[in-house]
Amino acid sequence: MALKNCIAKTKDKAVYLENGVAVKVFDKKFPKAEVLYEALNTARVEDTGLKIPKIYEVSKVDDCWAISMEYIEGDTLYELMKKNPSKTDEYIKKMVNLQMEIQEKRVPLLNKLKDKMIRQIDSLDELDSVRKYELLTRLDGMPKHIKLCHGDFNPKNIIVTKKNEWYVVDWVHASQGNASADVARTYLLFALEDIALADKYLDTFCEESGTDKRYVQQWLPIVAAAQLTKNRPEEKEMLHKWLDVFDFQ
Image (cartoon, rainbow, N blue to C red; front, side, top):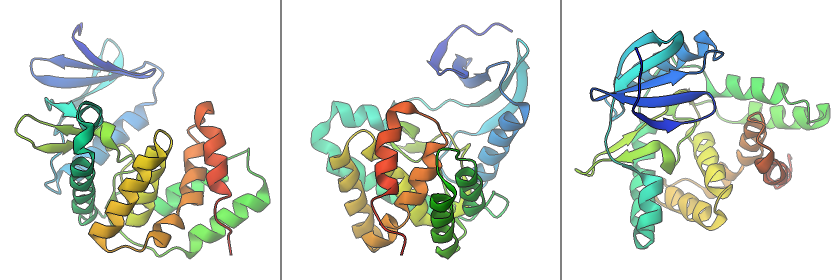
């Protein structure tokens, strides 16, 4: 089956629109286990009733693994924020409330966020054993929660339809864990592009949720270390700064 209408593309996957269905086709070298894991994660989150694209099937397209899912037509929140900067405060507040709605859900079969972070920190060759120990000690001391965490919650993964329905996409990194860790990650993703917007997001989240900002900030060195495993050269300088922002006492 030859797919022609490509609507999005990265280095290891492309999304096609075929008869009203979004077909995400992975590179031939992309691990089968990771494709199945993404589909399973998404299906488990789908059961919560949250507005996310529904999974239809996992199949092969031209000898490549593919996931077919519901196509959600609309603009990403990222695009809307660029088009309508005067609405930034409104968009951020709505985004925060959507994130809080997600965190109210429980998906007990998802992997634990703490376990994933331990593996990520352990895998970092660029950190010495002392720094790894400090990070893992801090992580071990964090409260153990089982809230649904998206893992990559940012405006590029939110689609807003013409009816103003907000859908959250890309659930491959979903896990169960501490909500403030997920908030710290969203803050970090904002900060990598716009620190002022990151601060606005964090202030809004803490105000809306009644969370002490210092509690979220305690996660920043841990989340920065986990982000280093993405191995993106353009991010490394800032991530290493976040590793040093707070002492580990």
